[in-house]
Image (tube, rainbow, N blue to C red; front, side, top):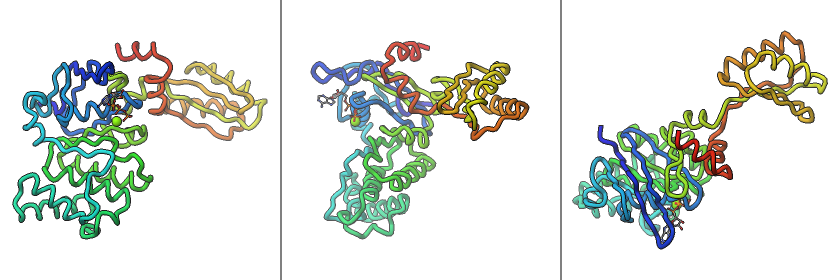
Length: 321
Ligand SMILES: Nc1ncnc2c1ncn2[C@@H]1O[C@H](COP(=O)(O)OP(=O)(O)OP(=O)(O)O)[C@@H](O)[C@H]1O
Ligand SMILES: [Mg+2]
């Protein structure tokens, strides 16, 4: 299968800044890929390279097998781009905006109308389609912008921070719209600052920093890289801390930590669910009162901090593995 995106050793300099510094990324079709990284990591530069708005200084870049540098015109026919700032016209209705874009894509009047109607339908915008865009909420406007990027029936949709600044409900609506697109056969690459967004929406997460990929995997794979699960036990009474610690030590699952002030005992474990059940059994046997016992899995925040945070050396170690 031809990858939908294939970037090898991509380099882009702006003066002395290396926005892309040997970026390698291969994405298979049929997935939502989330590009995650701190400010200035090179996310937008990569998206703009894919959209042929930026030309790389070195390396190769292909979309659906087409060379982005040598054949930008062909690339533009397979991609759609929507950015953080909705590029739709407020003084026109949603439908008119979409029809205009369709005409720009060379469709005749009748086809443009059909295309606009179908996009409104797909993004659940039919009800507001005949209202002026300037009366839309931010979320609806963003959805229309997403719609405008779909008019040309792209194979790959590029979304640069599609939900930045939206309220939680509009974000969820936009996620639904994106999922619908993917199930309809459009591949999506999106950038995001929101870890929960990447976690909920993406099949594959690519973390970049300083213009190169430092981690790449499913949300689950990335979380399991960062470390082990934690069994957390809140006891009711400080006197229970020591016996609980001893009994968990005996199980030998992992290192037991105690925080008497917080009435908390934690164990890091490998096989979370199974260890949790064994710990519960041990506590029942011990006969102590607990307020709460829970299995806490690593979050994407921890992955992200681990990789892009202060700990620079482990980053190199991890990405080399
Ligand atoms: N047109 C440009 N001219 C000069 N420098 C640029 C240009 N575009 C990007 N840069 C620089 O390249 C680096 C990467 O920028 P880029 O916008 O790709 O990062 P980003 O990951 O999208 O960041 P953010 O999360 O803030 O959107 C930054 O240091 C930025 O200042
Ligand atoms: Mg950006």
